[in-house]
Image (cartoon, rainbow, N blue to C red; front, side, top):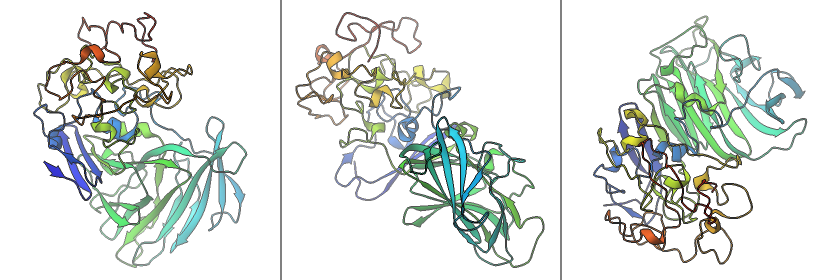
Length: 447
């Protein structure tokens, strides 16, 4: 048992994925094997056995969807126009139109220290859709840099909008021993490197995180080498900050290395470009605000329907745990959904396309009737959250609808589960039916 009273790191290892969860819980006591599957949390890719990868529940979108269509955020930076201020100087504001349908981005040059900004966005190299300022760092020892603030606004407007999620990759973070490229970001929810990388991360305090080249690899253009990329994500912000900088140990000019082309591609699907990624989650999602972050919570929105079912998985006995519990590679991720071992990705759908996965949406089909009511649950206050919530086995799934209270692999309470699935005759991880899924004898899942 571990009592977590300070930030605690948990490494989840599987050839191809290492997940580091960093979180703060003051009084909660967790077993090292939260789901009782025989795989300790340090090695377990699905700590609550709900068929959804911890890293997916950590970043909030299906990172391993094969096409990534409809997953994560994408912002396209092209054709900037000076909105106000002096071009390429501190205080200048540039408008990037239509970064996403109906939205613009305003990028402000916050500061320039011992550097010159030659172009605000160079589309002739690297990734055309990325934000790629051209910087020349002066012959000084230290960290010459330029900081930029990014805000998303309605088209033609200037009021910053709430950004649910913005993230992507910095590419070609390279350098020599005497000049190394570096980026500083603020209040990130998580980040990732390839398993083999020349990059490092440093906590600067105050929510600032610095990514550096170690100086062992240098290219002469904006390459897309996986070992020179870092992925990061900001969530629930009105603006984000990126500082592009060099770490210099000499005043000598080494052409062409003083001129650096640096890149931020705001496409969260670019996570897939990393090779055997090492992932760090610094701000765990806890949608329902209970004692468990979503990656440990079998009912992340407390609507009485397990995440497994709302994500499209099979749950015949209503315990919120994947029924086919074979785990050949002992990574804690049951084989039927284990994409690292021939399984299929659980669909994890967003039925009403409102940006919330069904498992964290109290009205997943957007019909004005809560999922709890549609599953014939009791919701006397009509808030979409199950009444009389108790959780004696600490799995995030209320005892009055949990098919297995006590997590002893005996579904003594199956008859009281809000929603169980039909069988899966071809073992593809998808139920054949959803008996009475909407409380109206309709066997089509619409919650």
